[in-house]
Amino acid sequence: MIHGLKSHGIKVRGHNLVWSVDSFVQSWVKALHGDELRKVVHDHIVETVNTFKGLVEHWDVNNENLHGQWYQHQLNDSSYNLELFRNAHAADPNVKLFLNDYNVVSDGASTNAYLQQGKQVKAANVSLYGMGVQCHFGDEANPNVAGMKQHLDTLAQVGVPISATELDVVATDENKRADFYEHALTALYSHHAVEGILMWGFWDKVHWRGARAALVVGDNLQLTAAGRRVLELYEHRWMTDETHNLAAGTQFTVRGFHGDYEVHVIYQGQERTNLKQTFTLGNAAHTININIS
Image (tube, rainbow, N blue to C red):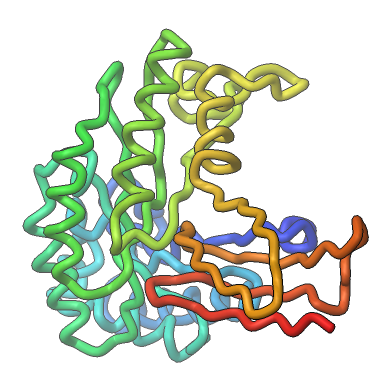
């Protein structure tokens, strides 16, 4: 399945290696203690990371560790989370490792605690790449853009990229749902520290929050108003597409959204394919030189 997704240019993130919330720890794991527990978790991480090496971009290492510390308590080791990061990094030094938690952006109940956890893990030099923020919004709750920005500003103090890992909103009215998604996406997409956004479901038939969070419905994946809005934002409003007429010595500047670009040159109605260029635009300016003869 993952090979199929990658063949279509779809990136995949791994969720998750360990989940520390008591109710999600398997009963057979709860029977383990001490060195035996450490070895079982170590071997699980090594096997899993190796299995998907080169196939996933990210791993959530210890999911929701703010809201559950079963492994730390079982081992009487408050720094055990750092060991998990070390194990994952040793298994694949190239995959990007994340913390991942909730109530840190959609509301601020755990934002400051997450800031402190992020600083601690970063200072330990265990290859923390980024902060995963889940972004589950309440039933019929309109995302507060200003509040989200404030929480993102706080978490950006850790000094690592932020990824919105589990975004969803819930609204019975499709148009209201579209507005809710637009508000949340605007806050995330415009923030300097946010590197990625992942919807936590899109199809009404399998969405964990049901049809009232869906972007598409039915077997033919018919777009809802929310789905149409999301596509309009991503594929039109937040996409840079410009055309310029060139003459000898012409220079021009384009202010564009971050992302991957293609430059095409059309001469007398035909594309000069030998002049096509690709580049990625990030925070810094990028200069493209095209020599036409």
